[in-house]
Length: 185
Image (tube, rainbow, N blue to C red):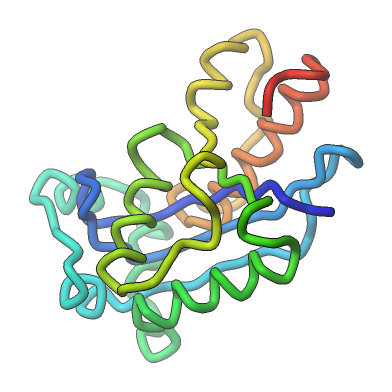
């Protein structure tokens, strides 16, 4: 049963209330040591995130302005294909639910106070429950800092594109567990 998910967000703030503009997620099978090809990616309409309680921080906007054109373009192109934050959250819940029950899902975010916390806030503002229980929050940043001798794999794709970042983090996570079998999940 697949129950581990690496999630990456692109946001317009660094606060727990940040407006989400993209969600990328990868299902990970630790038993097989693979990142599954079945991935999740949705671009979110900024105005819907703000209307739902998401915040925009000036420092984050300035940070985005200094990123590569490909990363910035990912947030703005084909806005007619972007979904509302409510739709993105519903789609994410359905996608994760296709792998396992909520009580079994473990979500890896890159920072104990970033991705998972921001997603929880978005679900709360939507009046819905996240598709994992709080005790199954996992922090990829903590784990990678505990194992600095396991190098990050070469990055493939566009940095700061949520799905590419999630894939990269998932592969690094698997590399750590391969070098340190039995590490606590």
